[in-house]
Image 1 (cartoon, helix red, strand yellow):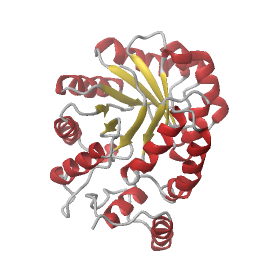
Image 2: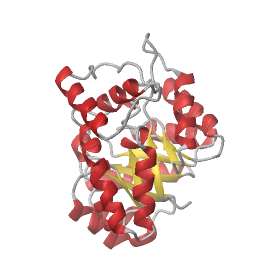
Image 3: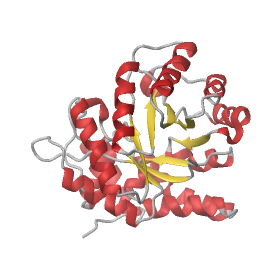
Image 4: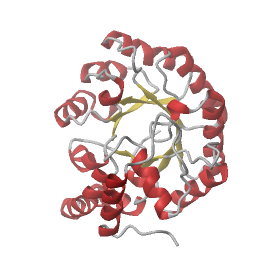
Length: 295
């Protein structure tokens, strides 16, 4: 499969009791499909996967696939710092009908580059599904180096990398080494346009939850060769992208979605509600950017 465009990293909405709000989750997905996104990504960082039980994790994946109904690509989170757990999550995603999986580099263990390669290679050897490897050193404590990603290109089911290192030089090197053998997807909304300029194919986006039309407009302008328009939109949405990381993701985006009338609900501990000062900054940026409640 070919990856290109806007893929939204879904939040997992919870009700007042802290349980999964499946109806709200489905409504959020329908809204994004109506806005023309290329795909959705359940059970990633933004979906608070770290605090979902594996039973809940699988239920969220199932719900996303059902709600999408084949209309958009579903990339199911299947990451763990336990390779065996990742394999089981990948098997579930494939059996449920996901189009691909997103696998984060193992966190806390701090594997070597060889360990990282073997982790992804083992998942690929056990489950026949397209895999996007996810590099976010700020959360995991380990950086997936370009030369390791080049090795992973030799595995047919490794189809992409979500790059959230924030290192444009590294991202440039990944594309130089791998070319079109895999899709480089931005993992940082604020850097999406620079990453596109370095050969990126799209973004797995947090901001797409609340401004999918603008994100799509920027991507479409770039792919159409209108770099001036893409830059104009980038500069328009840049403050929003930055404000969504005033605190740890997904605290700000859930706060924004609740304010705007989308299903979001509370966070699960150890994530805490957004501080009042930062919340006011976030809401002010949304207002200034013309992002207003649905109703």
